[in-house]
View (cartoon, rainbow, N blue to C red):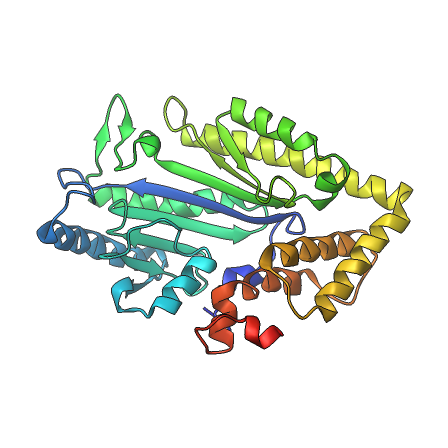
Length: 330
């Protein structure tokens, strides 16, 4: 992490990163003939750690340098920061877990959590192909040395039944404020279109939050490459719709879009109390302002940084106080 606890990948530019917030690939593996995490004992935990540690250290030969951290040794606030940076996924059992991470937190391997091994790669923008290749480069090297639990009929075996099969998730987070503003009914169409291809689209705040998170649901009867290609098809379709809507409102509804952008800029500059959801909405309208050449006194790197630094535990860490940050904003 950087000095302000922000993962360095957040500062790296990516394709279409005004609209695509991040791309992520996760691969889940378990070692053959060792019980899953909800049934393992102390000896199993040690065995998993020894096997994976030995082979992960060998990744240095591929110029992949990862630092091991035992999560039980970290203060609670640092674990929360890793979660807010998306380095550690939510809803993971971390009691016996360790994580290997690179300097930029764009590659990580979580071991002894819900699965014996969870490989994750992440990047800003539409970098799914790069994340996919990076994750499977690591997986293929480990697979040469470790017997992962695999069934010819079902595929890779995991503690979570819904992951059995390819045991891989691809995730893309998209900012679509123009579509939410002008054609909110399209969201239902996007959800149905994605669902038919085995993907889930989630949107918060009663579908008024202009951020879509897309991830694959289907794990069996499909290849990893097909999942990747289907995801890219869905993402590019929605991306094209958002771009066209921005261009349309820029040309025929300039006054109203300028009003939205400048209202957001004013509120972010002058508000004293604001919840995170409201902050995100205004942040995303500034992205539209940049894209439509309405404002030029802030850059996309700063807006990307703000999305993470405004999270609760980053604010707590910044002010070095574990109490609610609200008292600093009154």
